[in-house]
Image (cartoon, rainbow, N blue to C red; front, side, top):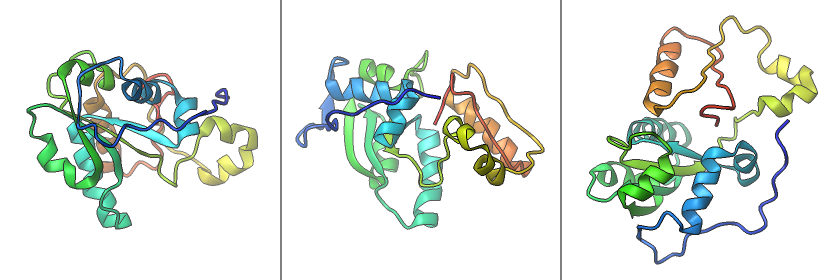
Length: 185
């Protein structure tokens, strides 16, 4: 089970900040910690989406299903990219970042093509399998008889995860699961 993490102070970005150029910024460190540490994500109730394609796919689904318009809390866009125009309407805050900050936020080997990173809250339907193992009866009622299991390990490119999940959805797979070591939710 993941260790519990206490958030002493909620980390916020100052209201006047519209551009970030330092990887040492406390909020940049907060977003990196959200991306890397699942216990921190659970404690904060937030998750990080890397890449404008996954963000656009989410933006196609959430407003129509939930009626929410600005569900991305923070949208970080690479300065000079066109990601701002297509995603800004779904974000509460849009902040432009330098290539160095985008590399730090995204955590991918090459940020070429990675023009956006979003911070949003965990969906209400989120179920932590590690925590559910203590109460296995509720886990088995959630997924009584999985016929297929997709296990992802060591995924470096978030686009690959999207491709695998779309392929699984195309075949009407019931359960998609990823290893907590690669790109956990």
